[in-house]
Length: 408
Image (tube, rainbow, N blue to C red; front, side):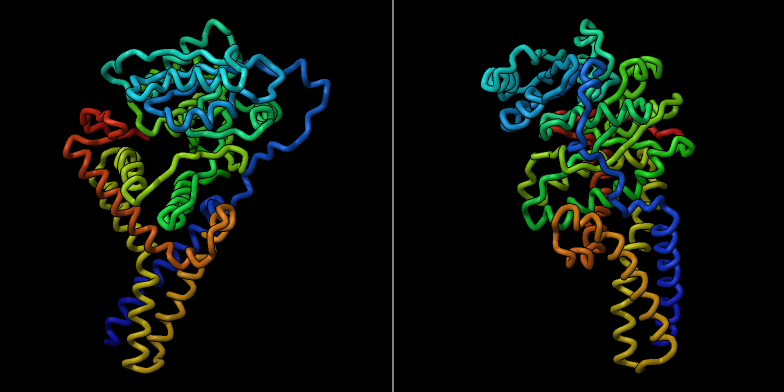
């Protein structure tokens, strides 16, 4: 038993070192201070200087959500030219008619153009193709900025002003906001704040917002960018085949020399409901293997890394407790328990800011290892689906396997 304790102590010590590095050197990913406040007032002399905006909304079978979300866009009190282009991406539920009705009910028909999207061509992913069609349709307006948003996103009054103000004040080419997710059920509380946490660890907001670092990320639910920056970078055709189009777009803009910024806010909310674990699972499994560049090596490394970082502290704690009960409080067992305690404590404490933001009980911090293992299983499931020819499936649409590997 003593040899097992020593081995576990060595492994747990490695996990503790990993957590020290993550907490201290990974761009303070666990903080939530990269935030946009939509309540900041604007002076009257700014009213003549607001850039024109074309809002692009790709929508595929979104009839249930558009009556709630679309009016929050159409009724934005934005001083400049502001027009919404909704692309009906081959919907089967009357999305186009529902959108037009929503515009009539909020007296904003002059702010909405509904466009019936064309069939998906080879080499394009559905959302990117829909966005491109909307952007092409909006070219006649000669708008300076594009707001790329999803059909499930609700906007608080004044938030578009705030995003534009951020873009202009910091001389940015792209601003992206992480929409606050819809957290209601127990599965939501276990997994959705953890999704934001893992995303922030993968794309630390401070690194994304630092022009001197290569890290580039964006949250596709709300992206404002300058039309000229997109054109200079080669347009959406450069990311035509990307499932994770938001981060690919951010990488494109930043790689072209543009400054980008990503932050959190309580003023942009996703209302898409997840009624079961299967709903969350399918959403994550749709893109997880793409994130790994369809690489078996990256998949194996991710699984082992998640086990090492998230599972070792609680499992080793149990082994340490058994060792104490069996061998007494020896030096080896005390060392193991101490290392596990600090590793698990760092893990849990790093999760508290996200839980506070989502008003979820701090007790879920102790369950982060479970959340991590569920996401690990989702990632493996994503790879299996890809190999079976169901990669990227979304609302009845699947994509052909390409065995593409992401460069860089």
